[in-house]
Image (cartoon, rainbow over the protein chains, first blue to last red):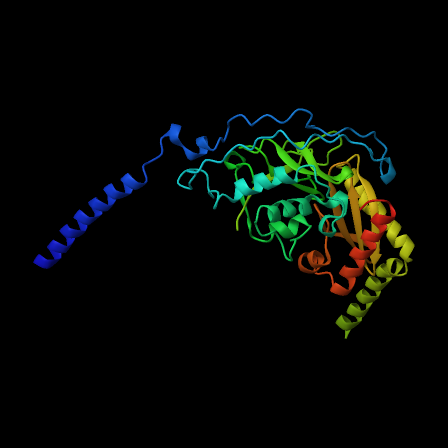
Length: 242
Length: 125
């Protein structure tokens, strides 16, 4: 009995010591010191460079089954002038930022997306220019040193396969950082588009511009523009894991 | 015996329903697939265009697009009606069709090749 009482007392002392140690090593975050706040969730996104279109040129109605009627000369913005916002080094998963950016992958993806900006996606990884949004994102991942999503050396060109890979973790929009991904889906699930978040909170997205087969379309995550199939649809935000 | 006779009768009805589409020519099946793709997309997407259609056996693969987004739709004809198997975002590869939609490899590979050739013929890479 004496031994048992001693053991209990020892355990209590040890627990207290551990508790102090934990607080020292991992203080409870104050609102002003929140990694989410530091990461810029809810803060103003960095301005886009001059000349970057936020909406594509509109098409006239009655263009069904008339491929040749696509605009042939959509002006492309300059590929320079964008300063990537740095990611904080102290972001952790201890607050509402789960899952936390892992090994700065998102920063690498963001940097690669800027590097790939303005590049042709015609026939990229076997995908036709109109359907190269997933191929473009996988190219960005490859440039970032991250394994592409889906099977094969270049990953899949098809969004459902990428989502089914298990490496895209759905996160709230408010938790997104530059380098996260957004998939926007039409109301009837017949269409999807994928792009790379450019801002904290993913207020701006860079993705493939199909008619020019060029990775140069800046848009809101809703992917709305005149005639967009995504009116009434939904956007899901993802963090890529290794 | 009565049950067996009923089953035979039902099977006969099923075959008779299936026969019109089974007898459909390749070109008409391709046209029907294009129409189905266009009507599905157009309801939600005013600027949608059918960029290319390819058929292989009972399957059709449509490439739809507009100025910023493209999609693929895989259709399968069942009897006299068409089943929308899947679609959405990016370009469907044979491996995608095999794993997601259980399309035989012998169908998936030529289907994608035909679609890409059709796109190239329209000047779309």
